[in-house]
Length: 253
Image 1 (cartoon, one colour):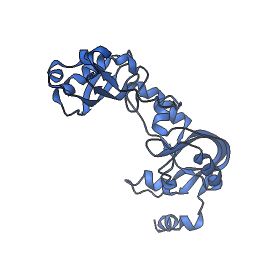
Image 2 (cartoon, rainbow, N blue to C red; image 1 turned 30 degrees about the vertical axis):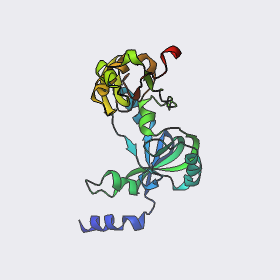
Image 3 (cartoon, rainbow, N blue to C red; image 1 turned 180 degrees about the horizontal axis):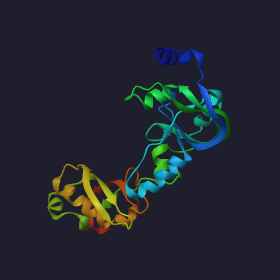
Image 4 (cartoon, rainbow, N blue to C red; image 1 turned 60 degrees about the vertical axis):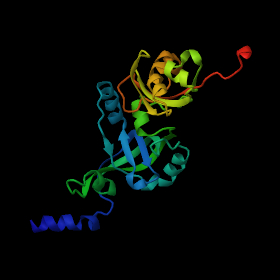
């Protein structure tokens, strides 16, 4: 028992780079650096990403991160990540094809993933050569949820401008104007699943009418919105709706 304790305690001194257990072998997957913090960089293998693609239509997502030692190729990865787009989650990502050895030893990433059990040792990959490094315009969530594509976000829709015929009668009588922002869920057949005002115009009648106006103009938002975290085919969109009275003279209409 004492010998085992000494071996565990002396492992970092005897094997500072860990023990090689396999390879080199080819690997492929997604490498992500959040907030430019390399201590929290993650790698998801192609097999893990393909599994998530199969699970996504069922509303499931499984984390399958592997620890990487990128010290030998750090400079090359930094150059590639500099060309990757910082996404809305403050992540930069690249698609890697690499050669790596399988190692057993100590790595900060292992402690990060296993902190609840207090583990210090584990298996990780030490990258020995990069074959392909492709900067991506999105981070891990968008990449996985869009079937390994990073679509360019659609332009925001133009605000709907409404005339007298679209006005709620009560607001028209008072001459009320304003701008309402609604948040809506749109189904795969362009049907409205849910809608609610998230920014008020300051007038209750206009706020109550906003979702009806959105529904009547829903085809103007075809293909727009975010799919992040939603079921297959469902999109979330925030849309501004502007209630304005026509103040032009009668003869100019």
